[in-house]
Image 1 (cartoon, rainbow, N blue to C red):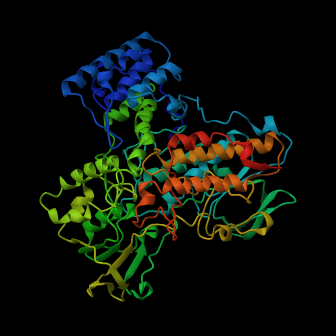
Image 2: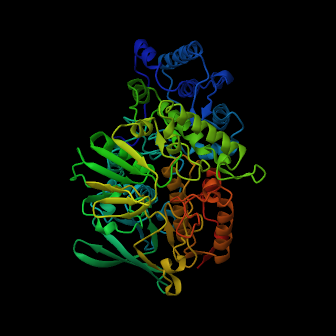
Image 3: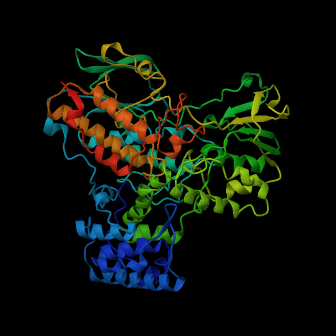
Length: 639
């Protein structure tokens, strides 16, 4: 994998161009042709894309699209023959024309954000504009990053670009975080791979939604090609980090293969993630089960499921991925349904990218950049409005607004179209909760087909207890199994666990939180100076925000600017003011209460044990980007 997919010319002949210009989404071809030619008039209103549930849906007839593709082909051919150099980043006005064309309205507030999402050659807008050598060449300064997953690697790359010394401590023997630890069959991203990737490290993915092994290979390649491996200490688990006021440093205790050791850090960055520590259900009798059993987050591939009676607890995002695979080999499969999720229609979920699309990315300059923008933009905007409570609607546990009900009807129609032959499955596909109240697993029809299988049975009767032989439901029926699989999610709300963090005045972070994690902008905690979280509390973007990589980019930029401020002003510590911290969290809570995930009483991993939403960012993705561009010094106590 090359980090920079930088095509500098069109070398293909007319026949090859003509053939491959029939591939890919038509709007991407239009934007590419317009950019290479500098002719924004190609962005014709009648060719503008339309979307359904953040997915492109063409409104053109086959004849209209064919004519448009032919016109773009002529533009590409003329560009090839002209010998002109490949244009770099487009100017403001051209970009504005593109965004209006994509969004159907004035999208000027998004322009700078979206500009950062496309990297032309080495022109990376998010690269730090400063270096430690410029700001504080003689100051001893070191950053410790906990975790070599997606966000930890990204932050390390930015620190390396800025010339800031750092070390990553990783408890596993390889990079990848959740993608290393989760290996269940069917594991894959639920965000399009072309935006579930770093802006500066685009690749031509073999599938639209990359399978686990492809994603893990990507992060391994990035660690190598970015020169990060020499900074990683593998098999090294951070046990604790303690703030020392006198030296204004963190003392970090690490357990490695040779025992425990300590190191000092000016800044500690937690990249431990959320989706890796399995959550076991609190069901009586779990320890009495005599058969083989495991959690999906610790998949036991040594267990042979062929011709076995298998029971699964859970129907969340992981379960909807592995259950179809289990159903194909098991003699019988019972799915114990606790809550029914809405499914997000995704026709390309298991599809390989077409040969023609991959050819265009590899052979037409700037095509992959415009493909990323085209994929990213509707996901960034999402449908937050549809997840927002309208008090005058009035909101209910069925729908919280007219817009939310419209989404409900669209999702219902998609599900019902697949079960005309099995209407009794409707309660398993059309939940009585507002869309957005729980995570929406993606599906291309595979889940419905699995529920229709003769060897699959969905059980909605509540579990009473687990027995030596299987599961007893409250109706008194005991369901016997050879293998029991827990698809019950992760301890997502237990942030930074099990690491101990001691801040100012000897305060233990987990005692301060008391099971209710909070952080300013998801990044900093009052009383714990120079400590930053990546993918921290209330930074999950549910129906808006494109991908976790975007969230990580925001967080990494905030960390880098905090480091810049410390170096530039020769500061020892920055600590978010208590009143700023409190005001922010009050606003977060008030806004989350007016979103589907906070309004609904349905159980979800978005909430902690107290019922408070600790995961989700209730505002626009633009606000998160804008507020994490740089540290606001007035928000912090500086010394």
